[in-house]
Image (cartoon, rainbow, N blue to C red; front, side, top):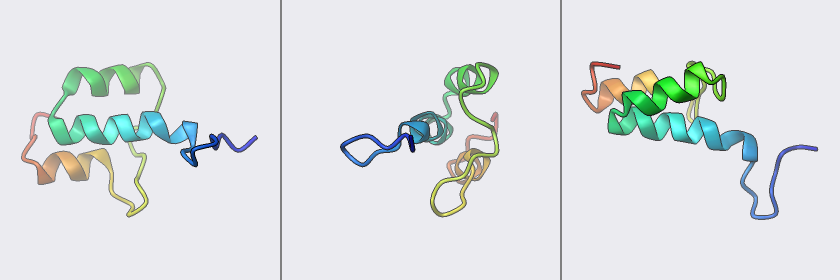
Length: 64
């Protein structure tokens, strides 16, 4: 099974998307939860090969 749902969203991408959104918002607690809970790898990339660190840096979230 590929993980793709009927709506075309791959369920395996949800934690990755949550990580990238948390980086955008500077949500350190959410990032910790995802990483420490082993739901997603810190170096995961989006379709443009952008990581959470790239996003955090671009948004000025330097505590990440």
